[in-house]
Each structure stands twice: as C-alpha cells, then as structure tokens.
Length: 372
Ligand code: LLP
Image 1 (cartoon, rainbow, N blue to C red):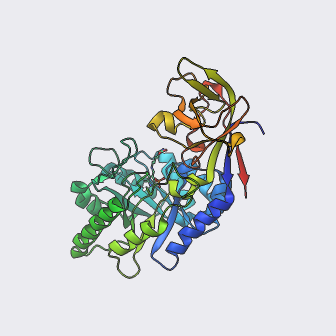
Image 2: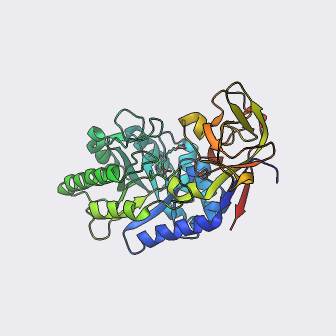
Image 3: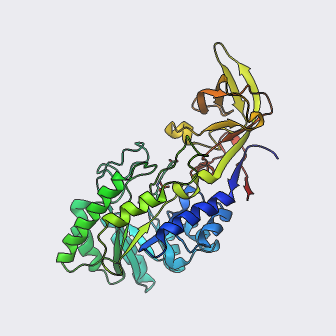
C-alpha cells in the first residue's frame, strides 16, 4: 500500500461509541459528534448509526451529515461567520438548531427564515469567560476571543430573539476549548450554566437545552494504555453539577474524544540522513498530511512498526519532506535503529488529522484505510 495513509481502527471506534452510550443511556445527555474533527463518511456512518446528532460548522458539513445518515433534527449549526447560503442550506434541510454567535447574526437568520416563511430553533452561544488551560490557539471560552456572545450582552440577545417571530429560542450554547484533560473547567462551566438558568427562570424564561460544547481531551502519549477517554468522569461531572429541570436536556459536542485514538497516520521512511551531531528520519508524510505538530507544537507518539519489539536506543529527529522548517514530527525521538523503507505510525491522529490536510507542495491528500 502506498504511503502515507490514515488507518482507522473501526473496532476501537465502536468500543469508544459503546463507552459513550454506556454513560449517556437513560440520562438527559444528547451526544452530537463535532464533524470538524474528522468528516470521513465511513466514520460518520458508524457514528450516525448510534443515533448521535451532529455539530456542524459549514453548509458542506450539514450536507455531508445528512448524506451520512444523521437525522436533520439532530444537526446543529455553529460558527461565527455563517454565510447566507449556508444558513439557507440549514433552513432547507430542516436542521434542529442554529447556534447564534452574535447580536448581528440574530437579524440575519431571522430575515432569511422570514423570507422562506419558516420558524427556526436557535440557541445563543455564550462566551462564559472560563480559562480551560489549553493551547492558546484552541481556547475559545475567554472574553477576548471571537467566539460567542459576551455575558454582558446576553440579556439584549435574548430579548432580541424573543422579539423575532421567526426564531424560537431553545437553549444556550457554550464551548470553552479543546484538548481539556481535567474535569474542573467543565464543572465550573456547569456552575455558570446553573447561575444563568436561575437568573432567567426569575424572568420566566425556560430553556429546553444547555449545550456544553466539546473539548474532552485524549492521551496523546499513551494511546495503547488509554485508548478510550474517561467518559464516565466527564459525563458524571456534567450530570452531577448541572441542575436540570424535568425534561431539560444537556447537549455535548465531542469531536476529538470520539475519533482521535482510532486513527494513525502511516508513513514510510524515505531515508535516514546523518547530520552533524544527530540523524534525521525523513518520512514521506509531512505537515500537509498532519498539521498539528507544525501548527500547535503538538506531539503524536511515533512508532517504528517495522522494528516493533526492538530496543528504542537511537535518537532521531523525525521530519517530513515539506519545504518548511516547522515540518517536524518529533525532535530527539528514541526509536529502534531505523532504516529506509521502515513503516512509521504517528498515533492518535484520528481527530484534526486528515480533516486539516492540505495539498501544499502539490502533495496528494492521504487516503483512508479501515481495519476492524
Ligand atoms: N463545539 C465547538 C463549538 C467547537 O468549536 C469545537 C472545536 C468542538 C465542539 C469540538 O471540540 P473537541 O471535542 O474536538 O475538542 N484543530 C485543533 C482543535 C480545534 C477545535 C475547534 N473547535 C487541534 O487539532 O487540536
């Protein structure tokens, strides 16, 4: 098989979905998979088959979600800059909810719904100003970033939606960041939600659902030891902290936690280059295939599959072929002695791997293979 390619372990995806179901069955949690993490149709079909909903951030994601079996009523559409065309796609498909991110967007969606003679369900995305202690590029819940409606503008936003005949306010939406590996920020978020729920209850406003977003992290260094994230701890934190009324739902939009561990990027060693003081393992995958190391300084565990079981006693920099000095997968990696032609796996690459691939340097997009 020509490398590089993404290899997806569908058995592990199934066990991950089982674990989520075990924690959420019979609870008010409704799971919506964040398609942006990985829009592979095979994965989407496996996820939609469990009855999960979809969190979409573009018109194309909405169309793909429908094609891959998601119930339109369980498709939610978020994003700070939805175009008119994308909003119309959402209205025409009959999606379950638009997550509105600004006061300005209320008028735009209301206007387009009115033109079509439709009433659409909306949730307001609130910026809860919580520091999730994650990478600066993927934190979203702090006051100074572009996402969501500032808490000080929420009263005005709620009044505005309620005054629109074509909009039905169903909930509040939050998302505090991604790759969050402790539950404390989620607990703080749920307490903020309780406070908002109580405040608006006094004004006679009752929400059908609270959407806590995504963000549960995975263990990038121990993919074999911890292949499935601690869903029990995450959902317990949410369910034990949130103070829900009878019939009220909590929606979760996990992406990474669902698909990250089931994908690896498989690449071949093009050559091992002796430098001055260190050797470079040059592989045929690059930042165009897996951007996370170059963009966020992220580290994906690197394994020499061809030398499995041999002692990891050689130090290498593992780099790609792309003409950028940031095209590096690992510095000073301890690996078994590595040779031209060896197969290397970059682990935990199922989320934001192929989804963020590009054709930079006119490289081919990596194909996907699936194993049971
Ligand atoms: N909901 C909203 C509103 C989001 O913005 C995101 C991710 C999610 C849900 C899903 O978050 P997750 O459960 O996957 O953490 N490319 C970056 C991650 C960007 C996340 C963007 N938003 C990375 O590779 O780390």
